[in-house]
Picture 1 (cartoon, rainbow, N blue to C red):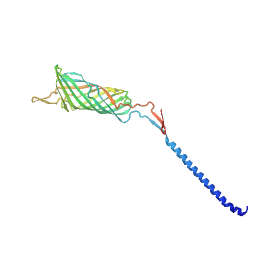
Picture 2 (picture 1 turned 90 degrees about the vertical axis):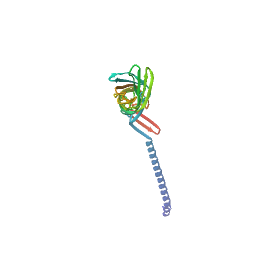
Picture 3 (picture 1 turned 30 degrees about the horizontal axis):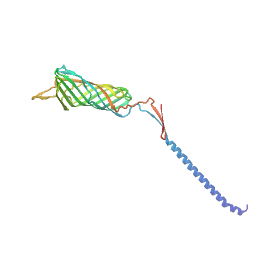
Picture 4 (picture 1 turned 90 degrees about the horizontal axis):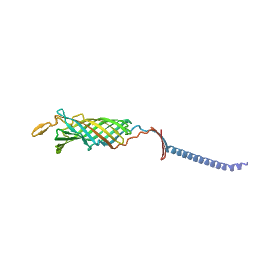
Length: 281
């Protein structure tokens, strides 16, 4: 090939070489973009799908609140005057007995509770055939108790404990030959002890009803109480002794949604976007 022909072909070869480099560079750039695009898509897919393994709790966790009260309450009293038995009549009341309890379950079969309860407790006595006395106090009580049984599911459990009551209102009615002749009430009266401890035990069934027996070992009357009558100081309760015990039908009207323990304790959840599948085992 003549020399001048070779010289003329050099620019053509250079142009072809540059064109090839440009094409290769563009292809590499497109390939890189595609690779990045594929990686992004794959990453997005991984983040939108999740696999979760877990275990259901064995009992209701934390502290939960229940509301209720004693409901119908039937009280009895072992009464003595000067060491001799005094006639008394069982006392029945419905109002006003309400309360709130704070509960803590440590397992599905064991729990504890405390709270605040307002109760109407008292007695009816007959010192003689013609005279009848109705004496009662409203108290604010703080119980501390234990629950044993199905405390998580609430189908059946026993409870027991102690309570301290603050007597804040005393009321008395006097009847002579069946006719009411006198009545009065006092706030924080000295006629009864200010603090009244007690013991209780009972059981509860689903959906929140139960039976409770509560006993007050302390004398219902304050024997040191004194008053004046025609200028003379007298101690009307000096020789009186009365110990209360009552039976009540308890109930809960809110906060009683018991925690249900699942038979299959473990779970596996698969989530993809808004879709979710759960498998228990």
